[in-house]
Length: 568
View 1 (cartoon, helix red, strand yellow):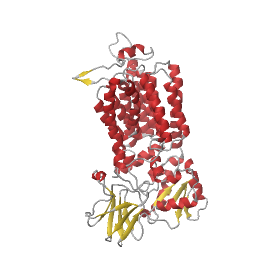
View 2 (view 1 turned 60 degrees about the vertical axis):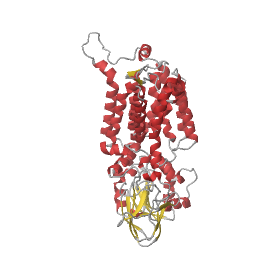
View 3 (view 1 turned 90 degrees about the vertical axis):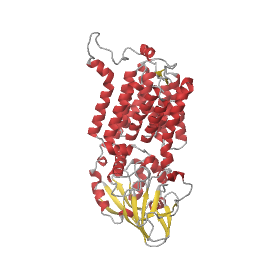
View 4 (view 1 turned 135 degrees about the vertical axis):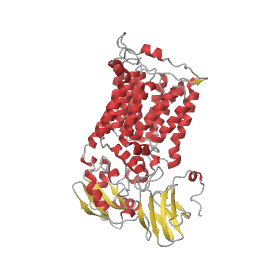
């Protein structure tokens, strides 16, 4: 990906390819750039001076300081709230296969297989901080041979810190893994690099996918690299495909036209600089990818912008032969966009609805409601999405904080068509919503729903309010489990269901290949589950009794051709 060296390992030797050698690049490096990390400031100095140490390791110090401040301040930015929710769920025993508390049942592994568990072990902020320091440590090895290795490493750390302070935890972990993969690749270990990149895909599939986009240029222009790139990419694709194979494809991520224009414009401006041919081609491939992602709805969506705003700037800065002023002019839009995103995220994090106290009274009120375990609550979100953390596991939420899953599970909010009272009632029934909480300052895109609820729907009535919230009860709400059956007890991963008589049982939750329904007194008796549309599953109960609904991760289920497990 970078215009340095690829060194295939052969018979114990590291061989240099036809790429430009570091010594040649160092000779071309501008006088302001220090190319030798061991260079002494004085010819007779017995030890490195502070200045030379900062030249060699200052970017690592910057990463440590910036990451430490993040851990200390822990700003409640929106994406950090989602990471907190997933990590807390993992700490409570929720695995990657199924989680009952969000989206009427969702698979956390579809977003990230490993990040919630790692975050639960280390703490969300600390895990992300470590990833930024790892990125800094790997920055100079990644940029080895580049014209501006040192300042490129600083810019890479700045981009990583921008991402960190916006709370994108999974992406930060994924970037650290993918940079490690590229370092291994450039040192002649394509199989190892591919394996690391595949592992990074289990943290966040986005960064490994960006790496593959970046390698398209070298693949097309460097014949001696093609075999290694194919080996690297083949192994990487296994990691990228695995979450989808195990937990299903994510829903579509919204992608605003303005974001597309920013992405394409920034990549196009960078491609006009004096860059190595392979890097320019990779930028053009990024433009094509951004346009295709905009035209064909998919799970990447607006996230493609990170390729332009966070990944591209340090690479272009380090490798281009253009004067610094021209480079800065080309990269200013990307850095401004990233900076404004961070400022906007931090501004919203300072709002009252980003604090835990904003939700205390609502949580207490919800905890005292009857039949809470057999219904869901629709919380019209604020800009901070903190409700998705604060109210779980007290209640089952009809929605949650993940745009892809929300678009897939609740498309009526994304079609662009007017939200009518009848459409909303149909959705409420399908999601088993019994209560609706409306905040004083809803997220802008939720204004239509908030106005509909507060405007006098004939099937809702206000039952409680304070300065921050209004809570409404739905008339004749549908339960999660169809009558006369009822939920006896429930957790984030299980439901105990009392079935008083034989017949058809409907459960308003999303289907998963890992869901099982077994008798409590005889777990060997498994009941067949069939999807009933997109929002429910049904079971034909032949023997009344107490049943356990749970999701068990089982690779064997991926290979089953039957719609249901075999009855015992």
